Length: 323
Image (tube, rainbow, N blue to C red; front, top):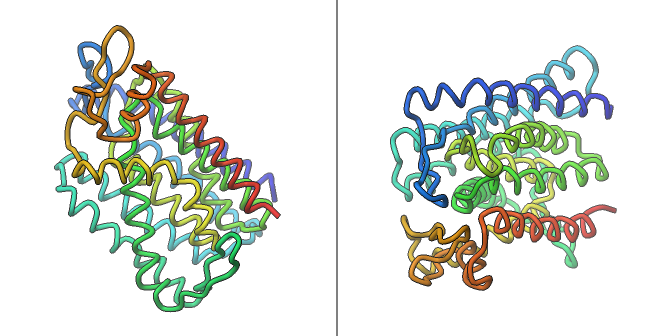
């Protein structure tokens, strides 16, 4: 059984690694690029690299379907297919947004409809949520019609909002899905394990190109997909509370940005002598709060700081949910 999961990881990793290597020069050739705003001169970097993440993830899921059909790899195929449809729907929203710049309110609203496949399968599944220190709580029809769509919309938008620094989105995703893979393994949740391991491989492959200094950005297609996989995997695995723990720093960033009316500019760093500072000393997001507290910090150290924070959250999550 573990060999099957290892195969999913390996295949999804290879697909994304090769695809990204081939994709980057083509994105540049067709001027699908974005400015690396946290560096002097704001160099142009290939954008929409998240397409390669989606490709690798899809390859992993399709391999799981093949193994289920022909080699007795047992899991609930309907749940995994429903998750794949939801994730692809969110990824499509990301592609359209990268190309056409969809208004923020539309981008926040559309993922609600992407949740329909999960709503359909959850209607015949569990409607309970395990809440630490409280136990199982049955939300009934509210879970199906309200909480699932909100989870997809909120998770995908949170992961899309918190980023903009080399390696941040893919690196945090690696920590999150490593944690979920371990939880799924210990709690014997094959569907959750399949989803988590099939995105972990692509994120590791993509990080090689996305880390400082980045050769490619994930774009909204990558960032929205990360959040969609996170939400669908914990919903399928009935471990929604674990997902909430793992996106706590995203929630903090959201609250700071909400207080500042979701700024569309100047949320990044002001580069001075190798360090990033908040523009005019104004804290518009969590990253800028760290910049201010540190009185300037390099981009590499800023990203590493968030990796360390997320790793601590991951350890706490493992302690709570692994039994």
